[in-house]
View 1 (spheres, rainbow, N blue to C red):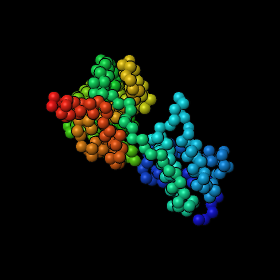
View 2 (spheres, rainbow, N blue to C red):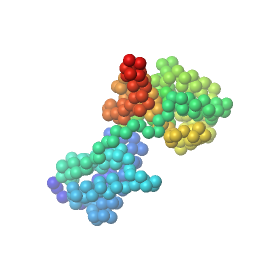
View 3 (cartoon, helix red, strand yellow):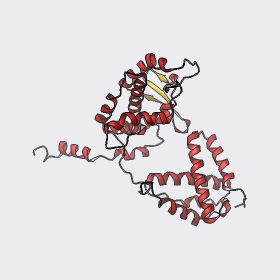
View 4 (spheres, rainbow, N blue to C red):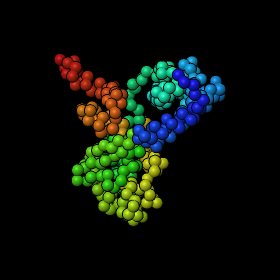
Length: 313
């Protein structure tokens, strides 16, 4: 393996440029940069290592123990998923270095991810709870009507917050009841829009959005804010909080809650797993494994319906 004097940060620039070529989203690249710089700082402060040629298996194993032992601000252990994601980012970077000959080819294998706990999805609302939340949104104002459309679309199509915020007017096909969304890795897909969401969306486009827009012909954002500009993530988070907080649900509600709730209801209703995967824009069915675990309520219903002793036999 050839010696190298290039620092981690020099190698990081090359890695992030490669991610750009592979069409990683700007948000993902920014997150990679933040996570890897934190790793570099730890290696420098703990072992005074700034170049890849000094990196060894023992250093990676020590970092993994250090990170896995961290606690949240509330004093709780990090979720297994959080640790696995962080390990995956670092392993991806190290594999890139191994391909270039900057480190030994077997070094990335020193990063062993903890086993996935496969817990049931958290922050999921029942259909009755979602309906209660939607019905309390005041649609008598332009902003209130916009909020109802947003929440209906999130729940109907299960799209991510970033995908919703990036939608343009031209991405919606009212006749076919579909929307073209830009998913992770800048991969486009078509998602269906349910009839209830479509009804609200049609009224929004015809009567509400023109009232809110600044009549800028170049502004094609589907959802806009008070200033007539594209709605930002902070605005989306705020509106979800405003409409859900008074209901005092037993879960913390975010924009992603509607995606999880949509997925749960589809699978509980017997939807084909492959179809759900395509709807959500997942790479594989593995991402849906947590949703396939039955809740105790589901088990009790099945037990009462199918067990012979429950049927009086």
